[in-house]
Image 1: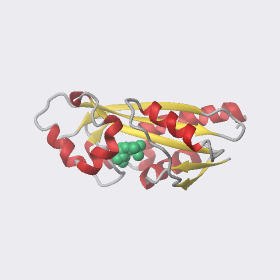
Image 2: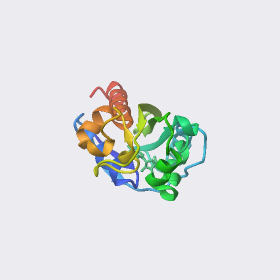
Image 3: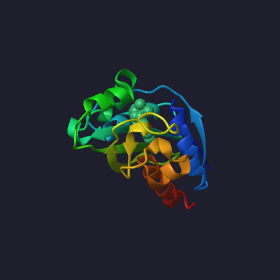
Length: 185
Ligand code: IMP
């Protein structure tokens, strides 16, 4: 099965290709614009995006993700894209300077519509912490400042390893299970 991933984020796309192709699903990228509302939960943003895209598209997946930092009461969360653009990783580290409580999680929410099927949403989280300084040069977005084991950042992991533990890797495996159970893959 070939699935269109609607995203303009090349980093996400590479992770989808690696994670889904290993599960026998081929992906290709398209960057159709769709309505992204501001809401408190990623699921609401994705639900709205699904409904908007379904007016013209019959088969696709979309992904909305974010970094939720406990000490900042979940910020940047649903504002992650804007926070990365404006504050950047250095700005987030400034907000966390000298803060002892560094727990954070990445969340990934995937919306999926397949031909002739009801749309569905799957979500997953990866718990970890905010490092004191950026580490590594792989990955994208907040990867240099987030660590799931408190030692290595996501930017120090090969993509395959990130996919085995990340929010997106976990959500993609849920997605594949759900597609497989409906398609008999
Ligand atoms: P969105 O889902 O494209 O709105 O992503 C929100 C922001 O979080 C973007 O700036 C992404 O670069 C960032 N982001 C999403 N997923 C990841 C990830 O797996 N690692 C690091 N940053 C991410």
